View 1: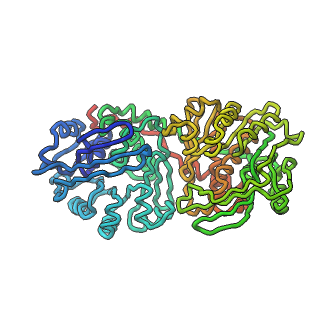
View 2: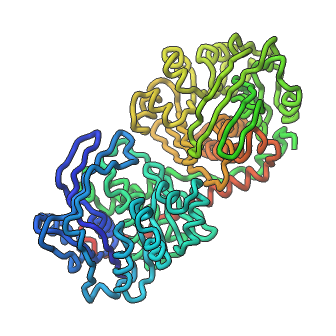
View 3: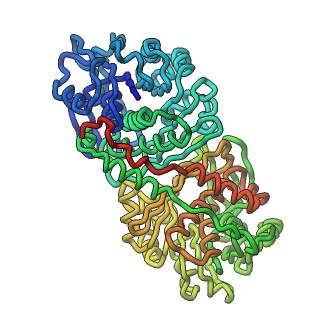
Amino acid sequence: MSLLVVGSVALDSLETPFGRREDVLGGSASYFSTCASFFGPTRVVAVVGEDFPEEHVRFLGSRGIDLAGLVRRPGRTFRWKGRYEFDLNTAHTLDTQLNVFATFQPELPAHYRDSEYVFLGNIDPDLQRAVLDQVKGPRFVGCDTMNYWITSKRESLLRTLERVDMLFVNDAEARQLAGEHNVVKAARKILSFGPRAIVIKRGEYGALFFSGDEVFAACAVPLASVFDPTGAGDSFAGGFMGYLARCGGHDHATMRRAIVLGSVLASFTVEQFSLDRLRTLTPEEIRSRYAEARTLAHFDELEADLFNGSGTPR
Amino acid sequence: MSLLVVGSVALDSLETPFGRREDVLGGSASYFSTCASFFGPTRVVAVVGEDFPEEHVRFLGSRGIDLAGLVRRPGRTFRWKGRYEFDLNTAHTLDTQLNVFATFQPELPAHYRDSEYVFLGNIDPDLQRAVLDQVKGPRFVGCDTMNYWITSKRESLLRTLERVDMLFVNDAEARQLAGEHNVVKAARKILSFGPRAIVIKRGEYGALFFSGDEVFAACAVPLASVFDPTGAGDSFAGGFMGYLARCGGHDHATMRRAIVLGSVLASFTVEQFSLDRLRTLTPEEIRSRYAEARTLAHFDELEADLFNGSGTPR
C-alpha cells in the first residue's frame, strides 16, 4: 500500500570517536525512505537547495523512491552538524542551518494525496498538519518529534498528536512531553493525548511499545561496532512503516514484527557513516538479522512443577 | 542442589524521590538468599554485629535459609547509606561503615563445604577466593564485583575470575573491567579473563548474557512504580542461582530461564523499600510475571515471501 514521508533531506557533517565526515547525505526523509524502500515504494515530500548533489537524487531514485515531491529551491540545502562522544546514544548538535528548509511549505503532488500510510518526520508540527490536511483519509499516521518542538510548539504538537496513530520518541522526549519521569506512566499519559500507540526508542537498549493494554519490548541486537548513530530513529521508523504499508494491517502481531524490523534497519544504519551501510544492504541480511533478534530474545516456559516441594516455606 | 552465598548482611539507610528509611535490612547476602529461597534452601556466610535485630535473623530463618554461617561479632553491623535521584539506575553512596565487616574472615561450617553452587557476593576478591578455597569442587561459581574492587584490587579480582563460571556486573563495571566502551567487545574481553559466561545487568533495560557464541538479551518488564533499586542486582543473582541450583543444570536454555527469573525477582525487589516486597511475594506472582515477560518479548517469524516482488530494486 502507498506510503508517504515528509521530512528533511539534508547534508550532514559528523564527528564520532571513529572519524568524521563533511556534507554527507542525511535527513529524516532520506533515511526513512531508503529503509522503507526494502518493503515497497515510498513517496517523499522534502526540499533541497541548488547545491544538493545530483548523485544523491540518483541514489534515492535507484531505490524506487518517488521523488515527485522533492523540490529544489534557490539557496543552500538544510545542513546539520553533530558530534557523538563514546556514549553514542546522545547526539550533540554543533550547528543547524535551515537554509531552504526555513521557508518550506510542503505541497503534495496530486498523486500523493491518496497515500494510505503517512509518516510525519521530525519537522514543525504546523507543517506536519499541513501535510495531513492534503491527504485524503490516511489509514495509519506515524509521527516523530523532538525536544525543540516539545518546548517551543507544545500546543501545535498536541494538535498534531490528536490526528496521529503512533508516536515515535526516545526516552527523554517521552519524559519531557508527558512531564513524568517513569516511562510507563509517561507512555500512558501520551496515549491520553490522542495517539493509539507509542513506541519509545532506547538506542542500544531497544524499544518499548505501548497501545491500550498491549506492551512489547524489543531488545536491540548488541553490536560490536557502532560508527555513526545518525539516522537510527528515522531508519527505525522507515523499517516499521515500510513493513506496515507492505502488510496492509496493523494488528498487534504485525506491529511487533514491524518494531523488530525497525530495530533491525536501525542496527544496520549505525554500522557505517551516513546511509553508506544501507547502500549495500540486502533483503537476505535483513532477514538474517531479524532471525538473530528472535534467537537473541527467545526463552522457554517455566517447568510446571518448579515451585512444588522446593522447600520454600509457603 | 546445595547453594552457598557469601556476602554482606547489613543495615541500610536509603533516600529515594519517594521517601527514606533508616537502618532497614539490607546487604547482598540478605537479598540473594531471600530470592533464592523461593527455589530451595541457601547457605549464608556473613557477619553481623551485636546491634543486628533478632527479628531479621528470624525472618531469614523463616525462609528456610541456613544461617549456620551467619556469625555475630562484637561491634556494630555493616552499614550503607545511599541516595537515588529520579534516575533510579544509579546509586549515590553517602556513607559506608564496614564495622564488623572490616575484619571478617569467612569460615565455612563443615556441612557447607560440599556446596555445589556458590555465589561470591560483592566483597574483597581475596575473601571471595578464601571462601572458594573452603569448598570442595563446586559445580558452578557465580561472582559479583564493583568499581571499587576493579580499581583497587584488580590483580586479586583477576585471580578470582579465573575460578569463576559466571560474572555478574553492570554496564559501567563491564566497561571499566575490560577497558573497552562497547559492551559486546567488553564482554568478550572479560570472558578471556576466565569466566565461561558473563551477564551484564542494565537496570530498567534488562540484561545481556554472553557465553562463547551464545548471546541472550532479556528485556526488563517495564514497571510503573519503582521505589528503591537497592538489592536489585543481588536479587537478580539470587533468582538466577536459586533456579540453577534447583534445576541442577546449566545448559543455555536453562541459563536463559534463570536470567529471566533473576530479572523477575529484581523487578519485585525494587517495588518497595528494603526486602519488604519479598516478604509478601508468592511463587504464583513469580510465575505470573515470568509469563508476562514471555508475552512482552514475543514476536513471530517473518513471512517467507516478504521480500518477493516488493518493488525493491535489487
